[in-house]
Image (cartoon, rainbow, N blue to C red; front, side):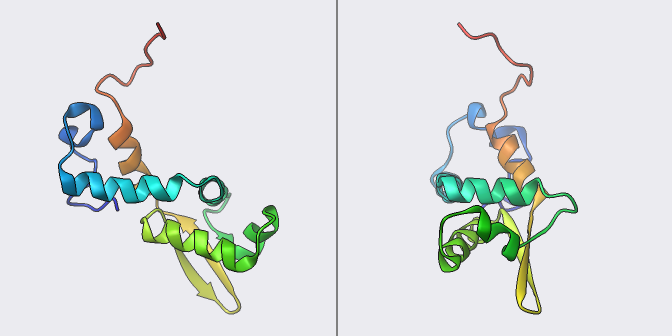
Length: 120
């Protein structure tokens, strides 16, 4: 998970800055594993891009040809990876992306030079 202590906030936390230690690699692997599934990646995209910042599970489930328990499993994986959070309101659960976690992940993948390089 992308915690504050091991976050990607410092320059030395970028992948291109140097080799990852074992603990940091294990934490990042959990996040990348959660994002490695197309359903979870789509769910995160749907949640993060939602106007108003949150979405009801009742609006997510119909977008997939999967059962509600399967969607709930995928959402749980994203929560455990620290990418989203949720709140139960009556019968429904509402989800939102955690911007700080997404920013830390983006910082991990950033190179020293933020300008795009030309392909060879």
